[in-house]
Length: 69
Image (cartoon, rainbow, N blue to C red; front, side, top):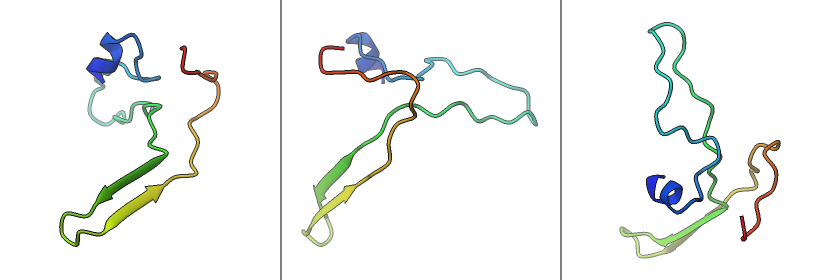
C-alpha cells in the first residue's frame, strides 16, 4: 500500500491513518478498492497448480482508471 502511494498510484479508499472510534460505535472502515481478479500458484503441499478467479467488481462511483492513470 505504501509503495503504491509513493509511486503516485494509491489504492482507492485507502486512508493511511484510519479514523479511530470509541468502543461501541463500530470499527468498520469503508473497504479498500483492491481486488484480485485472479490468483494462481503451485500448491506447496500437493505440487498441483491452483487457480482462483473472481467475478466480483469494484464498487462503482469513482470512475474507471486506465493504464495511464
